[in-house]
Length: 408
Image 1 (cartoon, rainbow, N blue to C red):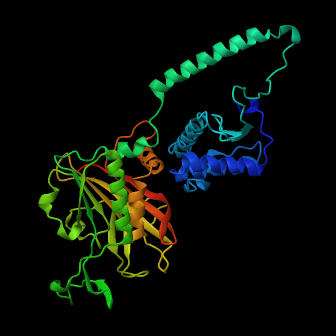
Image 2 (tube, rainbow, N blue to C red):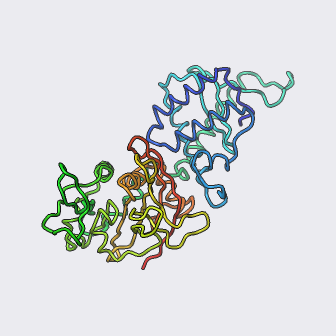
Image 3 (cartoon, one colour):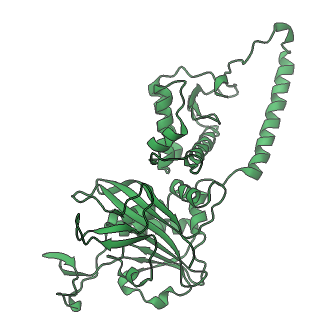
């Protein structure tokens, strides 16, 4: 297909301007698709006629490790298919005034820029072979065959779409969260509010039972990331018409947890209710008792696999530029109950863990890891995220360790 398209004479600046226009109008919600579109556009400009390889895209766009294997990880193919669909959707708008069309022909990661035909016009094509004049059909015959062929192709495409077209990326958010509220009551969000002593005017510190009185505890504070995380969950639940209650961890009564799914926001050091859960899986939060970083909270990898770290720590100096978050979905106390833990070693990791489950492209990645390309079923799992932070905001995260968990 790409060999038949007549490339646009537009300048590189005009081509990149078209890329940014598409991002602003139709892709701004998806960091992954924006990154992929920009990468493919830049590569096509800098390396014409030499499309990038799947392995290169996996490393440079989706930050996969050097041992990336496309046979077991279809992220690049899935995201490329999503991008093709989004481009087709964008250009299906008859009112768009864009002069350039961007396409990614199937079977390759090469990007093609071409002039958009005027209304009622046809795309300019390069003939695949020279047809003798004597064999050239009359214009009426050519146009009639072209119309018939076009109608047939559109009919087959529509029929195929009705039967085979995969769910849209936005459906991933709904498909993940629809499994909650399985009990007789709305799910319950439990956010962290650690035990502090002292006063804001003179300084706050964590409660220490060895030297502090319980009556001196001040439990009115939580992290910025937890606040933003709770807000983001509320926004998503409102869009999905999911009912949910919310309670700070210190006030949690375990009678409240019966017959409802639970979502914990914040690590056990902040969300103290988590310490009462009998949780011991592949990843746990522990305070470092040995150098380096004695006393700092870490996510400990109980059974490291090749390429994984034994533990994960946020950056040790201020401002924090890197954190780690844990997403863990566990079976609850009853067959129908689920427990979801979203926590970071700092407040930024917690925020990133929640945002991961509210973004369609990240959930597509999760479904891929759980089931491959053909299912959006949810089962117990644990994922560790590495989070990049800029200006006090999580701006990028990717999975560095993943486990499928078995039901007890």
